Image (tube, rainbow over all chains, first blue to last red; front, side, top):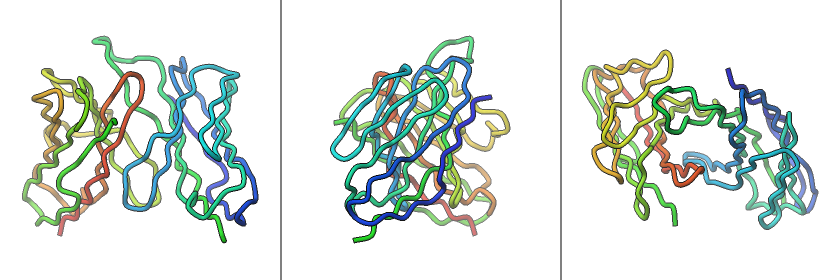
Length: 116
Length: 113
């Protein structure tokens, strides 16, 4: 069974204070690791997909990295508008004999608050 | 691009009634869509995979007769919660697959009284 653990559960930073969010995973045959941002009462907003260890992707103040056991979401000089819950999810090996895509296994998220 | 909508955004219904939630991919076609449920301060939990033109695949523990899924076109999947009970109250979110990535709708808040 695929598992995703995110830490910390909550993080409060001052504006401009850089930090990293962790996502540890166990999966049988990683097909992709995904990062999403979720604002209260809304659906997740896609940020990044990582496919193999060593891969890195950047978008504005965010940078995602991947190893064989975990992924990090680095946030550099955050602003108050970066406050949200950041979700990590994995997609493992296709389980259904009929083929097609599996859904994602999500972690519980890290609730990030950036104070001005 | 890759916009997914849901309707309604929130709904209140009485116990024992049925509720239908629509999920649409607005600017792309999606052979595969997914339905998730999220309880307060919990993670998203996959309920089922919806494939256009075929039967949905349900996750273990999800009652297929209670949560009816129809994916009749490449841009529309519907989830019907039948004989709803208060414990079905939750935030229901759909996603549509584009390439290898899932794009999520804004969610539907269901409250069963």
